[in-house]
Length: 214
Image: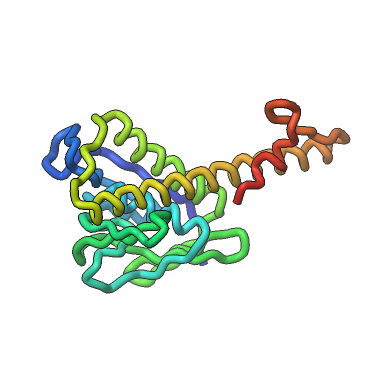
């Protein structure tokens, strides 16, 4: 299996009507290009749904979906958001159009399988860095726009709330993991050089303890 470089690029962020701001549109869009080595998967997709699905792949596997509910990694749309009973998780459905690829965890690496069956191996840290950077771009687009007018319908409003509840939980958890991994690497490097890194947070708390939130 070929080990390759993984990269996510996004451009032309907009709302469904093509504008740069729409307080009533809850789903962001844009052109997302996923580069897996020399393979380029590009699609004008629902970036908010795409980013959340990518965040999920950091802790769970994703299979190529052949369904009418639009569960692809790069979905055409994500116009329906269904909250669970706790409002902590969301199921996003759209149409059958989009681009998909499978994501599997194998040891400390990620194995990606495209729709035509090609498989590639990517380092997990590289993969996570790209996913988090893409998610941050999506979130920054929301923050640049006016505050959303939440739907009057409770069902739709709960779906949107659940989307951000799951988003924020996954982002916080992965950023904490990334920080912890970075500190661990620095600590090991310090030990190898004859000195042990003693990271301290605010108030002198050990950062390894501080980031143990997942």
